[in-house]
Image: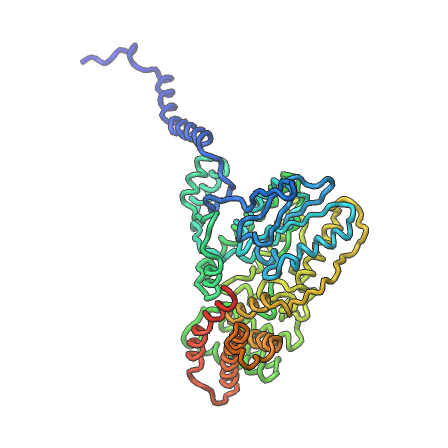
Length: 551
């Protein structure tokens, strides 16, 4: 057969064009798919590449109060019981502030009247009597930063003049799993920032949580107090992802506020360092090294018991060298340093004990490092170093029960420290826009005594028991029993009598455990099975105490 004539053979130009079309057709299809997604699929609620919140709804509902259209907090986790209501239209000349964060920011377990935000509002109204001041605390219980950002998406629409953000204690509360780091994940995230189609694909591979409903809060929190293992902390890669996710979230929130012309007062996250034992300590050693650690640790604890802090420091430093990852060793070493008069070393050891805690309900120090970086790189952001303020106000080497009711929730005094810091920062930055009639922070004493606030004290007592803060539990129980007074004859089976009996029973059981431990350290006769007996006692009375608390 003769070869085809050149008249029927495609030219080289046509062949190149055909090849180009073949090569470009996938890109054309992707472009068409991208356009289709942009037309048919709603834009995502946020650009979070770490985690997706599904079906998220507003924490606000609408209400009419005295003929005025208002917004009202209706979500239970945002403390709907506080009845926070504010007018849709901001008062003329008004200064509207939203406070965002978790339960520490909300002032829990106090009522809203004893929160830092109310103290701040009272002081600003005194300083600027001619300007309507609204301090609206929309913090939510057990909310991590990625949930706080959802509330931010709400409040940014309501004409704020300032946002105060205090968030970081709840980053490990919810169980989730991050996609392991890899070049493919990083490429996918980069594409997702610029392509709606890839954003959908990314959402299919990242973890997701409900944006509307979670497990019952009390059940959920109780499970954490019972030391449900948190893989996010145990896995170094997952731990790093939590910290990176936090910084991304708060930075995105602050940056978006800046694009809308809203200043942000961003708080570092203070916690109870001096009076709160690490919740969970783990060993990175075994065998002979574990036995060597145990001997050194017991020597240090014995020296503390015998009021010999120098010997305690020496022994506990030896224990820390053998097992540098054990949180309780660092905490006992901090106590020894403080009693020996070395406050700087004590402060560093308390902080390290917090960071090594395997159940991190207290914000670890990298959270505050991230806060400081975020404040530095965002022009609309003012840093309020609440952690430094609490350290300065502390009675000892680090903040303790004088400033915190428990591990992160401030006392009245602690809330006043934060409120004054926020007030000073707002006035110094001129955020209200005029000179204050009163320069210094002022708030009238309302006569509140938290030591006489029975619900608050019961909350604290229960947490001390559930989170194994035994020395503090005995001291707090003694205070409560004294305040309750003796049970009158015939009142043993009343609600008050039964509560006093339960507190006394728990107090005596914990005191017995502590005494057996002290006897063991001193080399005196002790019950060899006291730990087993205590575990049985703890399980038996723990549920009763939670029930009495109302949990």
